[in-house]
Amino acid sequence: MNSQLAGKKVLVTGASSGIGKATTLALVRLGASVALVSRNPHSVITEAIAARKDDSVLVKAYELDLSDVGSVAIAIKKIVADFGGIDVLINNAGMAYIGEMIDMPLADWQKILDLNLTSVFQCIQAVLPIMRQQQNGAILNVASIAAKQAFPKWGAYSASKFALLGMTQALAAEEQSHGIKVMSICPGSVNTPLWDTVDANFNRESMLQETTVAESIIYLLSLPANAIVTDMVLMPNAGVL
Image (cartoon, rainbow, N blue to C red; front, top):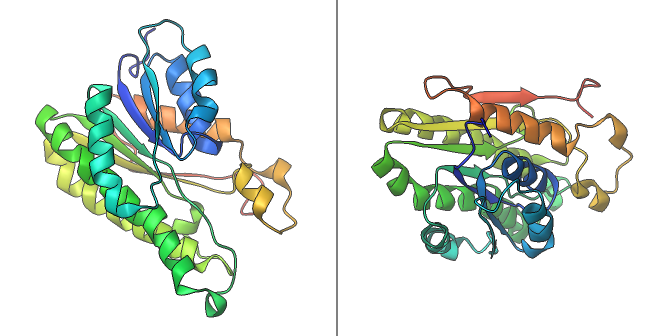
């Protein structure tokens, strides 16, 4: 395998479905070892192991509720220790809420911010000391086109993704001198299981496919050490849906 990701140790959150699952499978096929973190990582572990080209590629499942933000940093540190280190962190886990903000309960607002923003912050804090010690590493945060453009009834989601993008940019400036790349990707609508729970009449065939987003993530992570795409906007050719 000649991929720059071969032999790397990667932690993926939200690894059991959607973009996280597609990215996990792509990484494993390229020879990267992957720690699968989600509430139900065992649903994809068999498929991920089967995707390996050889047994040297390590694939392990770690069950973790990232919305329990008080325990995330400690849990991620334990996962990294058990996995034998980390080279790349992909913060992919997230959730949406559809509805006008006038009606939104505070508890639901907090859930969105906890998972989409605070848990990412906690994951980052857990891995940064190791990456600084290595003077090497990459952190990729999966944001959304909603981090660039707000949409009616997506206010809380958009607020969380705008904030995630701001945090990503600040972190990139802080960690550049430590040899750590910090990047974001902002996909437009992606045909994931999220839409199964949304009462909306969207043409899902016109959306991005999970594998397309995964391929773009692989591209970002595969650039030479002296090159970086700080923020990628990836849209369906049909435009915003």
